Image (tube, rainbow, N blue to C red; front, side, top):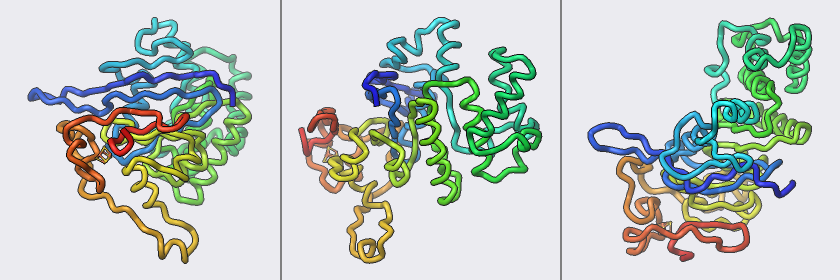
Length: 319
Ligand code: SF4
């Protein structure tokens, strides 16, 4: 892994005005860098703001505040020409392979479309390129003339991946790319993404709601809760020594494939529901569900602090 920062997210906020003077703070000041060639996992419960963060990074949403720098260029300040170049280098794989592919288009048309929009190839070259992409993702040229409904969920996600690769991107945001798939198929898609990363020198932002599979694909992981980043470190460090009470709870929910250990292990049950991002708790946003909450947790927002090299946490237990 080289140490060149490809993407830098700096105190990024994305708020939505939802009327009646109310604001939904979907993303409320998150910061992290993604180094070229790495996989950065962004994890948290549904509603924590991770998908909004992904879409704001891609530029699909305007930012409310903060910056997203791609190769040192501000994504939200780019000229139209720069933006076209950026959108070629950056692609997205979506959660739902059923919904993200046009049911009326053939696989060939689905994969060829981005290359046609950018007028990259002549007719025969385009054909070869589509066949090549199908092979890259473990499908073959016989699949090109079929329609999405003729494929299984795993195969459809492979088609989505082939489309994302069509413009030869450097960076891919994978938004819950495996959560709609069966567990056995999840592992195959994760292996495919890992192989493609090596072959094509890709950088990934891998967004997911559960930590179990993210561990296997991510170099580093950021844990989000209610629009905030609460912990960030290497994948190994996060699993071996989680510091934030929310990370500890998420990890304790992962089943261990050994019946003896599984039976005796202690689970940390999160109390209550995820609070509304329209009216988040004062101080630490996790305090309403935290077993370690102290009076300072309601009064003061914890400082985002590097606890040990590369291991950041925002929690008063460590301030
Ligand atoms: Fe829990 Fe307080 Fe830490 Fe928040 S700051 S996670 S409430 S101990």
